[in-house]
Structure formats: structure tokens, C-alpha cells
Length: 308
Length: 250
Image (cartoon, rainbow over all chains, first blue to last red; front, side, top):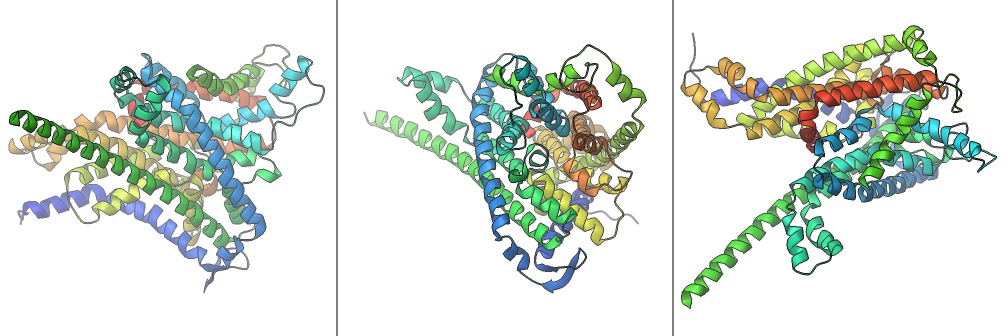
């Protein structure tokens, strides 16, 4: 017997049919694993790895251990510096790309290194910076130095390589928003007496805020969770939170502590994302209210003219 | 500024590619030679095994992510049902959380449910981090889709299967394809997540590169770099029409 479904039922059934496979997949392989991490962070460490089923806050207490606290602080300052530098470099780039006539070609040039395997890119830096590397042998051949300089395995190297790795993450969203920006507004500002710099700071930046916050988040979060860069180009004193998590899982086998650190990373990322979404919405709202104000002004203008 | 940045982005790659043609190991130029390419092609069986694993994973995970993600995008866009907002939120998160978190949570999950680490677990992990991108690209395409076409098709007597096959899929196929290609690139590229969920013998190419880097600078990797850059350029060339969409979505 074939049953005719009511439109509402039909809609529900079809929507579920289309979306349930992905929903189930994410529940099984994302929501549940993340929930397990949350759970584990509140459990006691098992003697031989794993966990014991007993509530405990010791993982969170261990995080305040001075050596871990130091790593946390370092992670914060390295991420903040690298992200800000990324944004500072990316803004003029995004601007130049949006203005350019060869957008596709430039995108191509930005995307090629971006898509090249990340390990290969880190490896390239290792072969440039290491004591027997390209830069040192070049400087020696030029007779500028006798002894190899210590260019790698320190925090500076980590910051340079992080910027190298994540710069495209900042350039691409900035380019997209600047590309949508109405450049006539800049001319208008210039006509009204603003200098070039003023017009950019006061007219363009407020208009591309959403791009800036997206660029910030998309660079900051991966840098904050970086693991390979500090591992391969950092020294003993450049470990970051990502390295701690991995060490706690693979070497020390302290799963609750690894979970607790993961919780910190997750929470900071989520705060960032919600801030980004919120600022995006607020901007939309502002644009709407600006529009309304404009309409009201026009109405006012008309009514005044009518009175006259 | 832009040209400086592009130079900055390319210099490390150029240096590596340049020294891949060096006849000796190390960063002192001796003479031109293709010896490392010969080693790469003929004397690196474990590298090729890793590459084969990478290809298997990239293809299977991209196909499953593309199918699941595209269907879900259609469902979310056009129908109202229970769990809709849950799916939208959850599909966004794997994209924004740090890779280490995704990797760790999967590792702990697999060991909690006692699934042996290997190609299968890598496949699952890759599908999971690829799904959000397909979902987003296809959703963006559907936003531009004219809903009245769908109503017209139904008015003219098309059933659900016909509307899907003859109206919806043809119009979203560019987004689906670009999603698929993006999955392939990301899957071939991924190191961090794979590092956690791979077992013995299931290492992918990035894992192999990692193990080689740990032994120090190797000219074979220099040669491999050039091959991989050429591969990337090829993919980006196929992508050229979608570069702007990709830029907007990443």
C-alpha cells in the first residue's frame, strides 16, 4: 500500500534522508570523540596509560605546574606575535591583489605554496636554516662568516616558519573581502580631503572588519594548535601546547592531562569562532541600521522640502 | 609588498628544488645531476608504498566525503527537520578546531572502541575533516540556486529522484567537483591527523617524509619536493576556475 505523505511529513522525511548520513557520521566520529575527551579530562590517570573511572580534577591542577604554565604562556605570545605579523603583511597583499588585473594568476601563486605539503615546506626551511644549510653555506662562501650561525632550533625560527605556513590563511580571506569593497568610497574620502592613509584607516578598515576577524581566527587557531613547526624547527625552549598534548598521549601516556590541554585549546578556539561569528553578525546589523538611517534621512529631507 | 611576499613564499621551495639537481648531498653546489631523481624513482620502494596508501586514502575519503557532504547540503538547504541546526553546527566545527584536537580525539575514540589503527582509521579521519569543506562549498552553490526551477520540475511531474538527478545534481556539479578536488588535496597534504590514527604499515606519504626529515636533510626529499610542487600546480590548474571560491572558503 502506498501512503501519501502530507507536505510537512514529506519535507521532514526527505530532509532527514539527505542529511542523516552526514549527521550520523559527525556524531560518531566527531561529537562522540570530543565528548570522550571532555569526559577523560575529569578522570584519573590509569597506571599503564588509559584512565581509571574515578572523578578527579588532578589533570586541571597539573596544568598549573610551572613548567606547563610556561609552555602555555609561550604558546600565547608566539601565536599572538605570529598572527599579528601575518595580518600586517597580509593586509597590503590582499589590497594589492584585489586591485590587480591578474587576480587568478596571483591567487594561483599564493595557493601553490599553500597547497604544497606542509611537511615539505617545513623541510625546506630546515634545509635553509640549519647549520649546514643553504643560508649558512651561502654566507660562508661570501666570506661574511666563519662559523655557522645558530639560525634554527629557537623561537625566532618558529615564528618565521609559522608566518610562512599560515600567511596564505590571512591573505585569502582579506583578499576576498577587500575584493568586494567598493573602492569608489576611497575616492570619495580623498575628494573630501582625507589623505590616502586616512582614507584607508577610516573608510576601508571599518568596511572589511569581517575579513580581518576571519583572517585573524583562521591564522590564530592553527598557529595556537601548531605541532609540527615547533617540533621540527623549534629548540628545547620552543615547545608549544600542541607538543605537550602529543607527548602526553604518546610518551607519558597521561590521557587525562592530554584531554585537559585539549579542552583548553578547544575552548580558546571556540571563543575565537563565536567572536568571529558575532562580529560578522554585528557588522551586518550595522549595515542594516546605516541603511535605515539613510532612508530616514532621505524621507526627512523630502518632507522638509515638501513643507517648503 | 605583494611581490616581496610571493618571493618569500617561493624562495624556500626554489632552494630545495635547485639542490635536488645537485650531484652531492648537502647544500654546497657541486654539479648538475639527476641522480636523486633516479634514487627517488627506482630505489625508494617504501616511499612508493606510502604514496600508494596516500592515493587510496585520498580517493576513498574524498568520494565518501563528497557524497555525504553534498547530500547533506541539499537536505539542510531545502528541508526543515529535527536535528537540522545540530548538523549545521557540527559540520562547521571540525574545520575550525586545531588539527591536534581532531587527531587526539579520534585516537582516543578508536582505542576506546578497540578499532585497530590502520588504513581504515585514516580513511575515517580524512572523511571527517574533508566533509565540512564539501558541505560548505555545495551549500554556497545552493544559495545561488533558483528554487523556482525545483518547483517547476515538480509541477511538471518530476518525482524526487528525477528532480535530484536531472535538476539539482547538474546545477551543483561544479561545486561538487571543486569540493572533491579540494578533498583530494587536503587528504594528500594532511600530516598531523594522520600521524595520530595511522598504524604500522599504513603510513601515508607525509608520514614517510616526516620519518625522513627526522634523519636530517635528504636529497631524495628535495627531488620529491619538485615532483609534489608540479603535482600541486597541476591540481591548481584544474582548479583555476574555482580559485576564487576556494579563496573565499578557506
